[in-house]
Image (cartoon, rainbow, N blue to C red; front, side):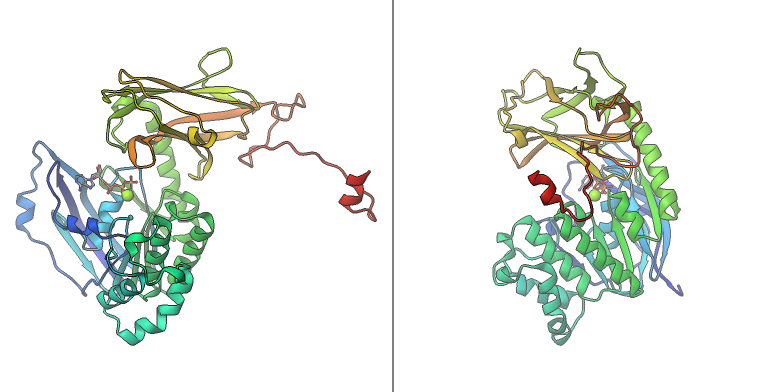
Length: 437
Ligand SMILES: Nc1ncnc2c1ncn2[C@@H]1O[C@H](COP(=O)(O)OP(=O)(O)OP(=O)(O)O)[C@@H](O)[C@H]1O
Ligand SMILES: [Mg+2]
């Protein structure tokens, strides 16, 4: 395999809907899954192939996926919700078995998968660090040598002797990432950790992954944040409905992904979309943007007032108070530029058991020219996601008179517009002298 560290051939993963998954006991673990992968591990059971016939209730999360990864590659896996990214990382990390195909891995793997796998909840942070190090085949001395660095990175020093089940999800992910990244794995696998932490922590994680890459180690990374993939990775792999559809430099792969994301949002009516999360008790069925007069708008203008109308179907049975509804606006690099949420303004929303619509009104749209995607999220309280479509719609912002100057020529090289007052002073005066005048 020379400098090839991962070779995946004809990999497929079938889920039987409604059936407990083998390996699902890991779901009771939380945080990082650090998994020692033995050199050149198993070619998989050939009998499995025969059993891989599609029948009712089966679902192929991965199909016929083949690729090779070289030592030192930093690969960004991208794709829509449900494309199979997390499944692929779980299979590579040996958390779940593939249905057919083969994987060969050369080197020790540390994985940070979606929150919900990894640490032992009853053990303290300190104990989990040692446990994970041991799983990774490190000696106690080696782990001790790395210990302080891990603690410093994670910033959870005060809680080191607390069982991790008492950690907040932020603390959890901090420690989990620190463990996975610092215990000198040869291959680091990270799924969406950036979605959880705050901005400063995200930056720190990206920096650490870059360091790991510079040291010649291999990084596999899933993110919906295109800017992160662009800055960290030297290679991109696009998954679509469980299939590998492009393996190229990150920029090409990102462009292909964004093209497909924008067009799909337009083609399939919202109530028939399957790329959604949530328990299905409520289903977003339509989304429209209306102007002040109630006319539907295709292109929006900066500085104007709008209503966003979310139609929904309901299986609730009762009226539901305390619904939380979010509209998330993403730019073409998948950075969330705006988030509108009724919780921010303490606005009560009640969902009707017969279905209905939710209206969100905004004044003075501050988006600059460009194309934006909108994600729609509905939950009950903080815990129960009712429906969530990340690529629900796309809108185009084009022109407008945001600054009230009568000139519609607006910048397109920024995302958000803010009115500012400009002035100048003579060189001797400071701005404060000026303000006193
Ligand atoms: N345990 C399971 N049982 C049944 N289906 C599953 C299971 N885990 C995942 N799936 C399905 O497999 C498909 C791929 O899921 P996966 O989590 O790999 O997607 P993803 O690309 O990581 O999506 P996201 O961007 O939302 O994280 C989805 O349709 C999902 O519903
Ligand atoms: Mg995922």
